[in-house]
Image (cartoon, rainbow, N blue to C red; front, side, top):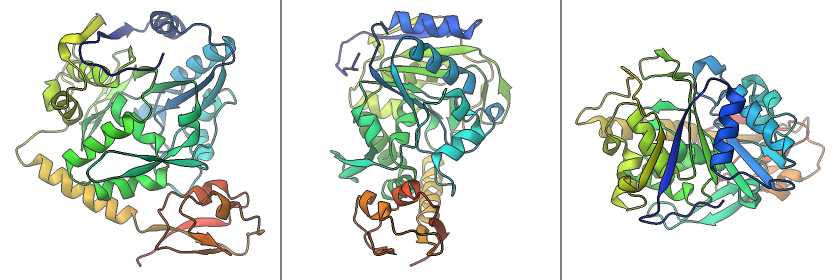
Length: 356
């Protein structure tokens, strides 16, 4: 099922109208030949940006995640669900519980921010990133992004959802290194290509536009190529795909060809769906906002609470930059991945705003 990015290859995208969720998911599975899954290690990556109620339409609908998980378990697959949300002072498990994604995962949700592996990138700004090992080691990767708008990238879909394979604490650092829109989009594309999903199912059941208005398209958009998916979703949002910066850069890099995208289903744009307003200097303001956010977030540092530490040294062992020794943190070496916080069994490491 591994996705292969080649010019000229037909890339099929299904637009499935949902009347019965289980039937729609089975149709997607059958179309993309999801068979013989017994004993396969399958990782499901939803969109769990932060603590949010499903009606806010910024996280994957727990109902969709739940049915996908149940069907895979029934097939005999070994399933794991996880994501790396933005730093909130809570571990991923607690965030998932408050979002409703933990219970939807049928006991398969895991904290994937604890163990990471460095992967080299051919990127002008970033030479390498740390990625959750579970993503790299799975047999099959299924991504379930949320169809939503994004102030920086216009839409947040298949390509953007792969940013979640990076531990949450490292995201602000990457934002600061690539605060220009073009640089950030190039980074997102490079991260996507580290481990492209084998299957992508976009949650377009209930969505909100840039003005906060609620729509009920009741659709799933599915495929095995993130660039084709983002292209089709741009059309569904009623915009020219070339104005979607991620799609635009992918087109320039010839990572896919629109003429090779085969759409199966009813491509009817969501009526009056508003995306972030475009104006000539929008990119400048977006770059500035991204820089301010990343700089502020970079001041959140891990700190020890000696009262709760039991000297287990798990934090030392898991730290990828070896910045922790004898319950002391070398902030010059600390990369703010927060793996130490994730692995600590006693909550002896927290976060604190600290300007060096």
